[in-house]
Image 1 (cartoon, one colour):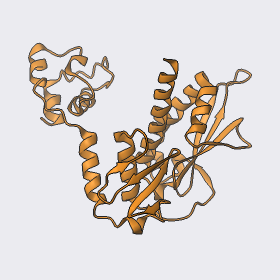
Image 2: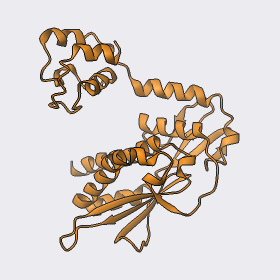
Image 3: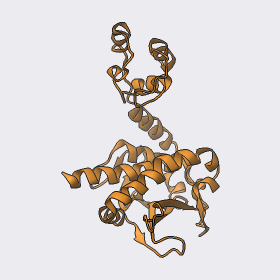
Image 4: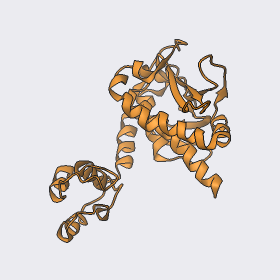
Length: 257
């Protein structure tokens, strides 16, 4: 089944009572295996039985396989310098959030610790983009990057706001996590707290945080070197920062248990 075929089986009411809010979004999530049919409160028994026949696709595994095939067509020695990677024995060594990852010519990725699908997709896409250029040293907001205006609301909702809330609730722990991921505290005239972090060799980010003070609500802003869009498109940059949020949330969950 494809998403449209699944959508036809759904109530098509967009009732908003499931996390996906719309029936088409629910259809896509169902196909990816992110939700089960039972999550739809308005589904008939017949529809439930029909949807139980769906073959769930592991979209992450499929995307990784596709990206690996593309990487196999790239001469890693030609892209290494441009993306700030080290070439060692024919492999690329890329540092991401303070950890070194080894990428082989066949696209396989290894590291000394745990590796998840998110990091594989990110690193393979970073290599495939094959950006070049030196940092400008000029920090800009997400909206100033190429096509950033279009995705600005998503970036604020999925990246800046969640990180602000995490710092509001767990400042000391979250700051320690940022430092463990390679962040460096820095001074910035506009904010009380600032950290510079290299998400990837050519993707430094500047996190500015204003805690709640004198009745003024807290605020957070994430800035990028103006060259960031040479190395990843804005959708991928959102993907990077969402990954950072997930790392912190998982670490917090483990810390609390």
